[in-house]
Image (cartoon, rainbow, N blue to C red):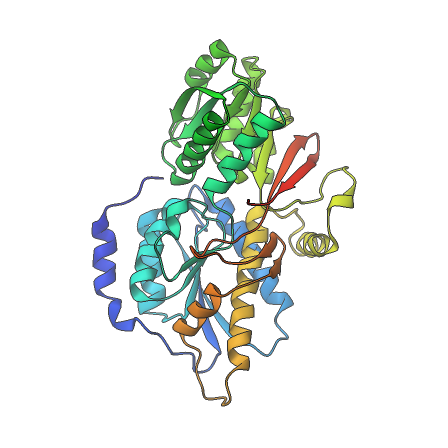
Length: 390
């Protein structure tokens, strides 16, 4: 998704700066904005994150911390993400925002939040620039410069790949970030990137680009995209007889990918945030913490959780955890909890045990935690390994 012009950001900022230091939790301990793509092309990811947030709220409903939730829909666009963040800050006067799972939308929303000094925690926006140089922006997921590096090294060290073609979504900052980091690491490790081919989210067929892939016969076809396009690409690649090993990122990790790609997804290998034990693979690699989350999610939604559901769940619990700790320091019931206090607590977050790993924020507000590598097999996934940042 393309970034929108700075005009959008500018007009919204001028109306919010007066509310820069919200300290307005009167009837509740704090107001939490939730800003996600609940309609539009990326609605699947937003709805999954919202399910995770709602499940975490249910589990924490008996706690002594009262959080009021205000939800806004970004309609899967940066423009609506900026408008939604502006409303949450100026009209709803939230203390903190859990915002956006799509990098392009998160960048637009973060610009508003940063200038208003309202902390924002993104569940799943992996593009490096989302938090870079920001004092009030954080994320629960790992970043593209880690995810891309992990898959490039896996291709070289474990698959013995000599060359690769990248098929990049030119409308997505997420895809471009993964593409750049995979390319630089793969080449640094001695591999050859034959070509970087591009497609648009508006495309409905990818046979032109895949014709190039078939002629080049690369060892690896790296496709850092979202499930809507990746599913069609995998199906068309199978129809064209392309034998290259297909690699991808966390944008693949949805039940809908299998529905679109059918059996063409089998053999595909991805990096993602947690392992969902929905295959016949022995559950020995799955800890009880994750299994309890998966069981609760299945009971509530009659479906397996995606990575975005797990990240939404972790994000809400992080916010609840830091507000609980702040509240414990208050000596009077009338004392309010400020956005500045939440921001300071998020910056000091250490060893938070989430579903997607044990999270400690680094100096750039990115969590230090592992990536999981999975292989698609019939009816599920095969857990391959978990890789920690170096």
